[in-house]
Image: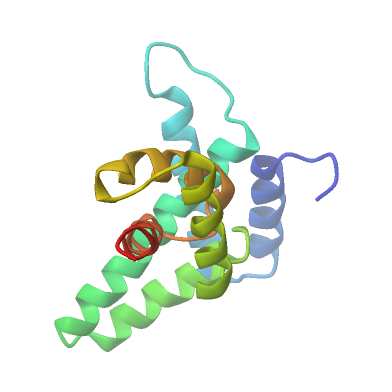
Length: 153
């Protein structure tokens, strides 16, 4: 990306989607920008989110879509699940590429070595070391499972 912030990119893409009458994309971007605005005004005083903070909000929204699609599938509501997956696809366009299992495993092995962890009681220490390296490129559950697997060897 150039000098534009992620939030302004979302806003520009929303205007484009509205002009192109892309309903799924415009609805998803509206929702994402609403979530960003909500986060900006949360707390004692309003602030502008950094790109990293906007990414965290988008990651949270993507997780909601993933969980909702799964719930709709379980309930036999395929059309609603598909809508959630369409929204998820739009959001994923703004998120960093997800790590493969091998890449995640390598980062975890490095974090275990860097933190000097020797077993499961050190899981928190390893998680603290690996999270900044992963930074939105893998779901927390995947990271925790990889750390657990590495510490049990």
